Image 1 (cartoon, one colour):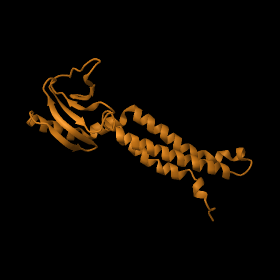
Image 2 (cartoon, rainbow, N blue to C red; image 1 turned 30 degrees about the vertical axis):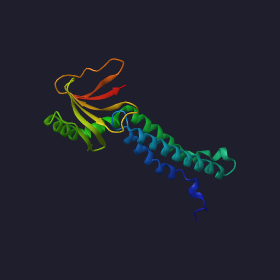
Image 3 (cartoon, rainbow, N blue to C red; image 1 turned 60 degrees about the vertical axis):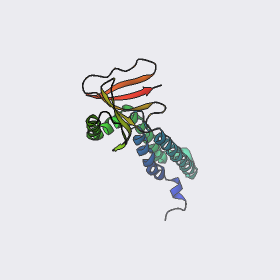
Image 4 (cartoon, helix red, strand yellow; image 1 turned 180 degrees about the horizontal axis):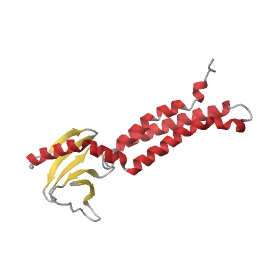
Length: 194
C-alpha cells in the first residue's frame, strides 16, 4: 500500500510540470529579439515549478529514515529538474531554437516577401507565419530590403527579418537606426535601435 502523502515527496511531478516552462522558454526565444511577454510567462512558470520542487524536496528529506545522511542517495531523482533547467539554458543560448524556427518558417517568410514585392508601395500588416506574428511587412526604399517586423519581439527595439537579395544591407554603427545581422543568404535579422 502506498503511504498517504507520498506523492508530495516524489520528484516526478515537478519534472513533469517543467515541460510547460521548457516549451514556453523555447517559444519565447524563437523570433529575433525574443517574445518579451512570453519570456515573462515562462519565467513565472519556472518560479512555480522551482517552488514545487523545493517543497517536494524538503518533504522527501524529512521523510528519509534516520540517519538521513546514509540514505541521501535515494534523493538522486531530485537532480533531474536542475539538470533539465541547465540543459534548457544551454540549448537556448546555443541559438539552435532560433535557427530551427527560422528554417521551419523560411518558405512562409519568402511567400510574404513575394507579396510585398508584388505591391512595393503597400504595407502589409498582421500576418501570421507559423510561430511568427508579423506586425508589418514593407519594402525599405533606402536599403533595397524587405523588412518583416515581428510583433511583440524584442524588449524596447523593433526587430524582425530583413530579406536583402541584391546586396548585403548597411546598418548604422552606433546610434539610432537599423542594425543588421546575417542569418543565411539574403536573410538578415534587423533591429531598429532608438
